Image (cartoon, rainbow, N blue to C red; front, side, top):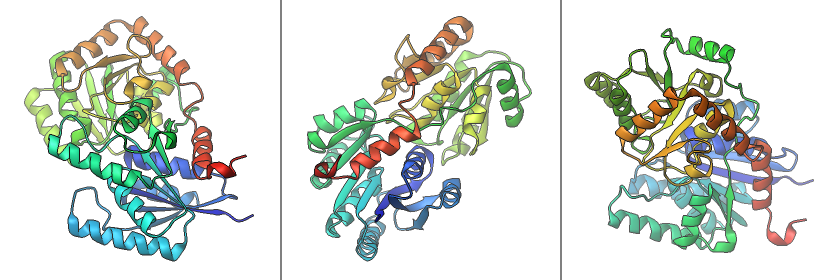
Length: 377
């Protein structure tokens, strides 16, 4: 049996997009698929890929910021790589890798081109000019995209509504998480808090994500300051370019925020949270929110993009508008003050997740996306 050669291209092999790319590659049958991950940079996921026997190629010119010289260099290098290696499928993730990777695959006559929209490269916090430019770019590379995998229904709807990819090529997927991760109990809560070095017995409001503009950690800090609750600890798991700014803001606002930095054991740490908060300005469908629900942690999130696929207001969690620390504080306080309601929301959230967000489910979606329609069984 000849294995299908798959190039998985992701700008940064880290955070949500990197986790989905890695878990997708791990979910494929190694007897049928040989995956090479091509990335501009990475962190601990590089080691995890190596442990799984997945080849990783680092292309430093593939960077997130718009940098014409590097972008052109990355395009040429990816094109040469695709020609030399003869991949059967190129599967891109994220905006920059999605544009350059799909252009290179098209120029290299790769038989099958797949792209995953984890979110959209344009959003309401950009200028109209920039949004328009991104839409035009996506429409262009969408012409030679055989399948668009959209993380969450809201992303799928926007891709179809904007005409980024032909409708019959658009498919909605979930994010892969460990459905057997530790559930929140008194024992796992205590172990997680010990692992985080938390000694205060009071409630913990936690967030997971990059300390970056998209995730809006400043709103998280201001919400905790507005709560003004003695004994409360705010915990942010994840690193990023805004770490110093967030730390300084917490001091100025007198907010009880602890920055835990990057951690490789997030599912084991989630039981430490009494409430999970997602303050993002825009999203696709964050892995961390689904992981929190699997762990049985009640969730407050911003009503953006595909988040309402899993956080259904009043049923599986609470939603607030982005950039409203006052309302985020109000919702967090409500769950802390009403533990029975919080427990009901958490239980319903776990039931709502079901088995749809497993690695197995993603592997099946990828196998179908990599196979031309006339070759499907």
